[in-house]
Image 1 (spheres, rainbow, N blue to C red):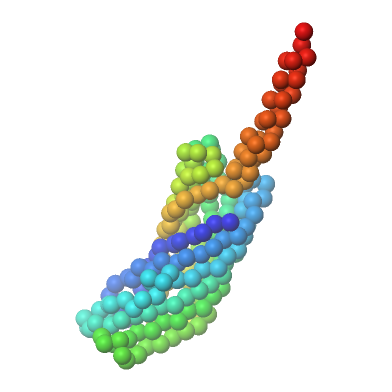
Image 2 (image 1 turned 135 degrees about the vertical axis):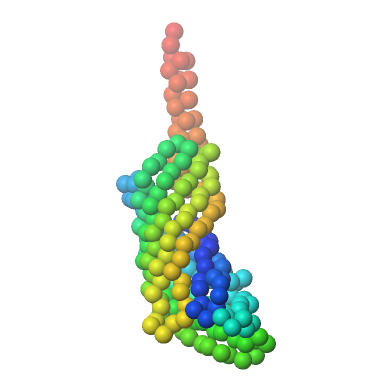
Length: 199
């Protein structure tokens, strides 16, 4: 289980610069044979990225654009290197979703362009986890996302993405709790019993 926040950019064919966007997601999955992870999860554009963004088109005219997007992905992750203090993974994913895009005039009272439709996406990247403690650390990820909109769109969402945050290994916490909370006291009792029985 993981909370994911990715940062990327979109490009409007009518504008002269790329607009940053943040996407929040939730992943639920399972680890298979220590090297493979599979799962799924929903993603949604963050609230601050839904607010109208001021841009300038090719004629230097002020415009405002809005983007709403949500999608659902399935992912696979392979552990390339796993050491005591760090781990390197290769995540890939595919997904389906929908988007809505609005372009408004300078006063935001007139809608100049509107489009909506389905999207298909895929992405691949590299993930680095630093583990100063066995069960908690920091994680950073970067990669490239390919997004296919409908044929009439003025958007280009194909771009690099990155994310970073806190990493927690629930499995390691479970192991430590079992060992230190149950097994280790049991071993100590056995050792004490053996020592007490010796003449």
